[in-house]
Image (cartoon, rainbow, N blue to C red; front, side):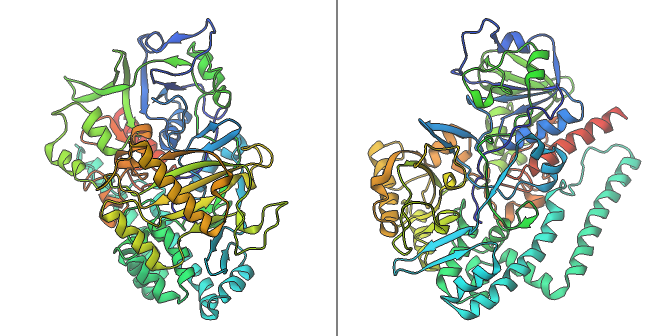
Length: 608
């Protein structure tokens, strides 16, 4: 469960044909002493014009590149960090411990992406969690939930027999609603095209849009009026109202409510938070709806390059990053400075790097946030001011901090009988700390609204090394903490202040100690990413992990802004392919896939 940026991605190193190249473009990119090393300028300035350049090697950028390359296009991916994968990347931050730096769970990755790119053949493996959720209480009780209906009934009955009966009905209703959403996720939005010149093209586009709405109307008809009204209520209501209508036990409501607020700056009482609740149960693992899993150690990113690509283009491979050794070109260059525009046609013709290298391309796809794309990468005065104002006014507020921890032993929760020799069911899934009631969630939110890190933070804790033995030394473990609420802008203190950072980290550890005494003393080392860190390190504007708020006014035809939800932008040849576009955040791959299909459609239309 839960909203989270997802854990480690996968290799496509032998999937895409030899037309895609990953080009890390940071000043300090690692390189070996091999004499085959060459500069990016030599590589990129051979008079080559790429069919497409993707800015940003995050999971959506790599997904888009994979689809474009699979269709026969020559594609280059520009990544400024020393590793590819964006926020869905694995890094060994502490010797012997491999962390999914930002993301940490799988579920939202679209089944069509897995199937069409044959990802399982290329190393994708899921480690299913059962139970998937554990909420300890300070009074000695606890709640376990998972895919086992018998376990769920038994666990919920400890708090409410009525809730135990209602829970499968609740899950059944959400499954119905997820089926409606499925039809919206894997297609571009029915955005009206403004550049059609012929009446034939206009009618064809109109028919296509009519067919989309007809399918959606048909699904609504099959759902029935009662369920449709319930669906609309879920979409616009606060999560607290939805859950209060279903259940009475506070611990059950609070556990489920974390899905509605994790990764957002919303409260459980915020209208529309019910949709966020739905967004995080509509994923699946191997066809099982709502099942969250870890992905095995080989994952860290999607990479649509390979030895063949490197050899064809004369590039050498990175020897300093073994996990990426077959798919990252060892090229040293500068970051992307701006998108370039052909003055005569008014269309993009590539990107300029800060070292003066001009990478020529017919199409440019940006996996950066909408704000970063248009405020920093697009030249001034080429985008209508109305559009720019809409981009400026997007909500990039963030309340999320990620803490990656290496520990020398498993935490032992005092509400469970400890077995010091092995992990128990309480260690397998997401552990909810400080989430015993809806009121606790709301109090933590109110601290954040006032510009203060929550006095008692809401923590989602996972221990992936319980199932994946490859990411930590024997007997030791990797612990992920997804923490809220931590405002980007503080009314007191500063995230750049080391003592302030350490004080907040210790506050989180002390809260865990209340449930698992001795946890703090088990810590070997940790890495903390506050909202400003997420912005600086991963380009996430405001530290927002979704590239922008997922509120109802920023979804579907209004994502990123009204009139431009179809991945195209006012600058011809420039497309958005990141989470700031439809259908939004999470490691889904849907924005990348949908954007690539729009690019291919436009290429086909222009060639006709």
